[in-house]
Image: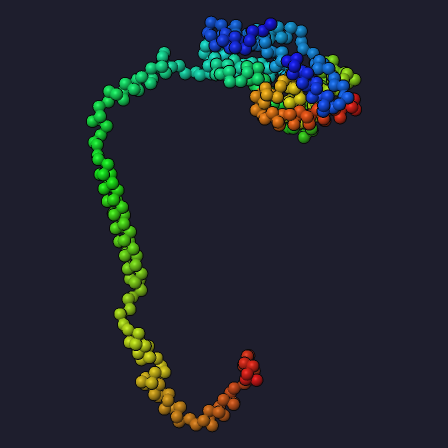
Amino acid sequence: MHPSDSILLQWFHSPETREKGYTAIIAKYQQPLYWHIRRLVIAHADTDDVLQNVLLKAWKGLDNFREESHLYTWLYRIATNESISFLAKEKRRGMVNMDGELANSSAINQLQAEPHFNEKQIEWKLQLAIQQLPEKQRIVFNLRYFDEMNYHDMSEVLQTSEGALKASYHHAVKKLAEMIKNF
Amino acid sequence: MMEENNHILQELQELTPGLTWPSKGMPFQVPNGYFEALPDRLQAVIDTVLPIGELGSGQPFSVPDNYFQQLSNRILDQTQSTPAADNGRLFPLYYKKIVSYAAAATIGGVLVAAAFLFTDSRPSRMPLQPNVTVSAQESSITSHTIVAPENDLYREITKKMHAVSDEEINSYLEETASTETIEWIPEEMN
């Protein structure tokens, strides 16, 4: 059982318990953040790089964190922004290297290169289908379906209105449903 | 979280009735012991790259102890200890109005002077005509015109014209005049 966010922040803001507080924050949030990033950037090594950046940025920013938003939505926002930045860099590099091949094809290739990839397994098929979605819909679907995040918290993470997020999620679900029917 | 999961399932049923969605289990693999080792790895990075206490606040500069706590009191003390005489001479408010009116009057004077200068400059480039009446101007024009009756040239021409008969003039016109040279003849003349 992890301590509450307010206790974690209290530990972090006290010089004597700062390290303990930070370690406890990582222990509480490392797995949800890891999977959120992994679903977006796919490869473990890339996920590890992005996650380290996220947690280091959190370390630097926690002093100024004023609890106006939840700690977990704040961490998810950093993780989402870092993942998007990473994907944008990869896309730029990919467009230079691959002579304009489709950007999401590299994510599909990475999925197929995963050690235990099984194209007949429905969970892998869903991951392949998710990669066909536009970036915003992909993020919204992942946060709702896998992270079970409500729209209010999601609007804090993505700085988007709840109505727009619902519309994005519904579009994503409809598109994925069509793909799932053809599995 | 459980309640939210029920909302999500209900939402999926409404959007895609009858469809079975895959389980939420992740098919990806994570290296063994990755999550257990992550906090220590990060702490090591922080200790080497971002030493605790130096970059924790993201501010490389240091400020003397209690600087900000004492700042407002220090400024208040300074404002209270400064004598009023040091603020400069005091002028009554009407003095400010007088200065404004004087400035406005000066600007007005400059504008008027400039207007006079500009209106006077044009005639300096064109010589001024003497201040004469219309009738005087008319007599001046006729005295310099060739066809004026009192002109010598006019008298000479008139005298020579009388010497030529009407028949001679008509025959001259018949010889020299040609309809080909007339490009346009008014309709009433045809």
